[in-house]
Image (cartoon, rainbow, N blue to C red; front, side, top):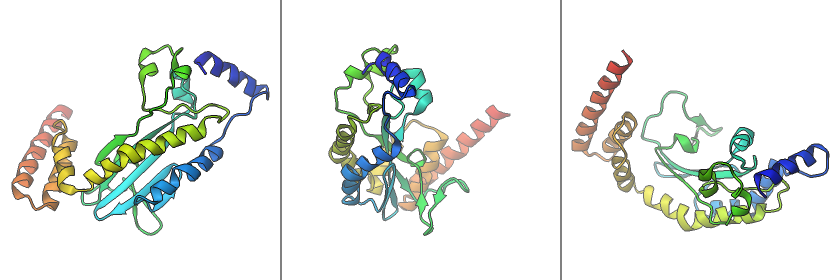
Length: 232
């Protein structure tokens, strides 16, 4: 379905001629296809769209998010289309007060974008039949969104593809970066910034690497001064 057909279908929906899928129906398929795989691989709190697991000092996160109406209006993607974000939150990196949601058992429930390391899953389906008529060429090529048909006819195919990329690539990423020394190396590869220095300081402290701790304390102090001069 192209953008023109999507708009036609939306008009039909308003006239009562086309049934539109809702979140509960999508969630039902997620519970059927993806949730069991998450439970088998370390995720203890599985809530279809928001999922968490705990391993030592690491909190594993998998978020499934619909692109929504505004994004749909701007780009042409159907509003129920989804993207999937992975994250690992390291509990020894102190958050800002009130930044992270606390669960009923006192557990931290970070969102993927709050994690110190993040990654997306990617679509391997041919979605050109939906995107060929997009105005923006970049939107035609992107593979970080799964198109979901307004009538829900391709939901099982979409969730199965998400499951496959999680198994093929997501699990390996989680396994690699729950090793704290490996995760520290990944953080050190990031572009220099206050955020990088802040995370690296806490990793160095947790890993008892005094040389790195002194290095990142100094870099963090210098960056704070630089930012302060700009703001003043």
